[in-house]
Image (cartoon, rainbow, N blue to C red; front, side):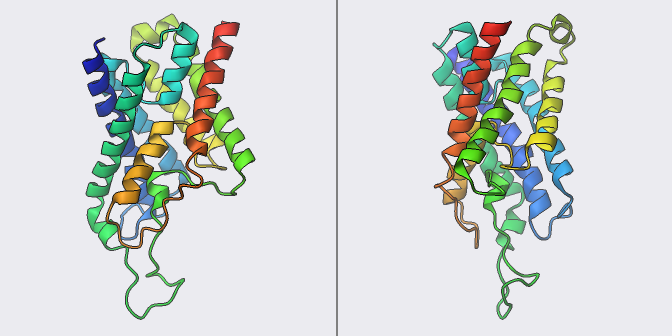
Length: 249
């Protein structure tokens, strides 16, 4: 694969992933959305379908890694680092692009995120915080616990992805991406409660950058004090998964 193919594939695939993922979070979160308050199960499946669509689309060009933690895990296992920077750059650009596209889809809902004159805090017209649509927010803010959660959840993602490569039938049938998408749904349902399961540095960082600059009324903070955890945690988890796979398989 050429550097150009890898970059284009990862941009397109990651943009689709974030379009679906941020899109389902917007659908569930924003006032005047028909899917508002439809719940965590909907969010988990929305992100899983995002992986399905993004990875299958990117696969012919780049292999559809879409996640720096996966890229790092593969590099540690194989020892091939020459194209890692191309993957990481494409993933970050794609994540930012996907966040902008999700914002445009829900533009009217974002623009309606304004407290009506004369209302008081806590009423139905209170602005909806928007960061959770784009990036992760811990339910309990505890840096050590949050970091551990992201590390373990990312190992639970990357180690099976590496092991799927040993399952000949998955590769021949073309169902590997489908299985990975279901894996992401499972991680969301089982391990996503504490932090919102970033498990992907680009998925969190790119949209957080976009959230900082988007002209969303009453958007609230972008919470840069927490931003290092959903970046460093998944990178550590991906590296550990690569090392475990290399040593055990």
